[in-house]
Amino acid sequence: MAIMMKRQLNEDEKQIILNRHGRCCYANGHAIPDGEKIHFDHIKAFVNNGTTELNNIAPMCEKHNLEKGQLPLEDFRIKLRIEDFFKNGKRLTLKDLLKYLKNQNDISSFGEAIAIKGNDEKIIIENANFSEEFKIETCPLTEWKYFYGKLPVDILDSDDDNEHSQGLQPRYLIFDKVFQMFRHFQHYPVLQPSIGRIDGNKIVLFDGQHKAASLLWTGRRDFECKIYINPNLEVLNQANISAHDKFAQTRFFSSIMVLKLGAQFGKDFEDYKNTENGQEKTEQGFIEYISTKDLVQTKAEIKNKFRSYLYNSILENDENKWKPLVSTGNRGSKEQPITLDMLTKSIFAHFLYTEPLQDNILSEKYKRDVESENIVRLMNLLFEKTLINWNPSASQNDTEQIKLSRMFSSKSIMAWSELFKDAISAKLEIYDTDEKSKVFYRQLEDSDFEKIDQIIIRLVNWQMWDSPKDSEIDKMISNKKSRLKQWLKDKGLSTGYLMGASE
Image (cartoon, rainbow, N blue to C red):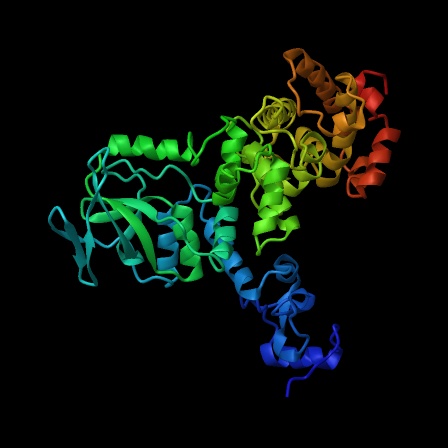
């Protein structure tokens, strides 16, 4: 008989769980060090009607328990594995995932060579482990031959560049898209096949790699595909690039940010664009659209994903000089002192409007591109006067490194960026509260950035940054942001000073 209990466990019940599982995190089995806090997690979340009984409780480390949130345990375990895969690099394709899964013994092989037989009406694909006959179709425009079929992962590969030929795979895998599609495909069918071609004695996929990657994580090992037999590669490549860039079923705006929005949210965004309801297409409308049809994600999760898209559009901009210094993890390092958390609570918090907009993205009023470009320009102006001199190999007594470490410590950047934003708003004569919340969501002139540059010079030249080592400032920058902000103002780093007044 199951032992039923209250929401909180008593010590005896905790000990029963530990005796059963040991000090091992139930998320991925790693040992929980002595002295580290143990959380006792509902395997099926309490808020999702998971019962509070011993058979539904397991030990988990604090980090994984907090990250898991309301995710089902198996989904969270897959999320951890996807995160592990993405640690292999930033420019990963389906081929990299196939290699990873093979090394992890999740699949036995991929990209096996095939033999091809047949005639104008049918094609036979076979090797030692597979043999299947497919009906040949003909494109009425190009007269290219192709077939539809369900193909095993063993004979599929990604259409990447190699030493012998140029691949047709135009994009890299995106973590959020893979994970969200993985969850989606647990509840919904696959509506479109992946698309590939025969390349010598291989079948390679160039469209639908996120779909295939997500399905692999669900355990799928065969895939519905459309495979071209004899395409003109130059024409096919151009068609594929256009499909990912110029057209997304029905392209209605050339904004780079809209294209990125489509890439981030995939088919949901395509469906929203093509919805004939007479209403303007807006970011807010898109979020509402997802919320009404997505049974997996909460509205808060959708909004967080939207904010991540905004952050990435700035951080992944090739013009952004901060990019090499931003850590992909939650902690900074000597080589990458800036974290996404720091930026979301400082530069992004004050200069990026992170709520979904109600501006019609078909209209000139929609200025996400402009906002993104303005923020990148701001960050680059800051970089040229500060982080350009960041030296991870500098000695502990290097005065420039001490100054930069003070300016770009977590609490420090959060505190001064708020004063920085107030000074810029005043210099640009933006005083209305609503307008200040969108301070960079507007066209700015070179003369405006000249004013901003003068504020940056004042910020960098504030004398307390250059205090001797182990001065009062080194104690203060570890305080709460509100207390540090007041201390900065008391010591002269005020909005007035940034605008040109004496300290």
